[in-house]
Image (cartoon, rainbow, N blue to C red; front, side, top):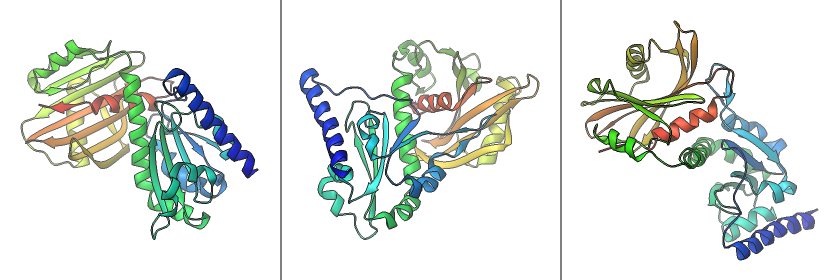
Length: 325
């Protein structure tokens, strides 16, 4: 079986090499944008720890997993190595691991495990994440220690894929120039619209349809505390006025501190509701202070009866193009 696996993995590498020589480029990756393809022969051992990190439900009216997991053993490598985001889990004894790491497989340090990234390892537009341990006894402990880093890394990978897909048709340069008048830039996707009638009150938004999505920007010439409850109260005041009475369901909120534009940022995801219209959906919010100014960027989805997490990632990808001037 070990010889067979080596043959299969070598055949894939040879096929990719031949294709590159013939076409001058790698073939494109495949798969859904928020899908993580896990290749490991240790799934029975590590599944609980991996799912605890990557299958947390996102607050939506009907909870959905944040990432979609596809799992297969090393024998699935020939087909799974073509996917967009690949997560390999193994030990230094596995030939597929040693093939990627080379000499680094023998220099894991005292802790006995490590996490590595490889862009475009086998196909174009691909991100490969590799977790390796000295032996199976260190796999669980290593995944526990690296849990937060693993989550952040996979989130960044998905957002990178989503950014490329969101702007595949290009950016609206005219809309970008229109936003520049307010002292910041935001990449507006083609076919999205700007609504700036309330710009005098420092509130503007962009929106797209099918499904309905919007991103609003609010700013103040002061510094505000990055406290979840006070930021959500501000959001409720803004949406009550400019979004016809929307408010946040406080029972469906998750907040975390991240870094954005090199400064501390409060990232909040949760569920918005509108009692008058009896509607709701998920949102993602970034609140931060930058050069003595406060900014609140919020993306929200309305897509009743359909999956929403993919659209939520798209909105976050748009938010992350924001740059104060």
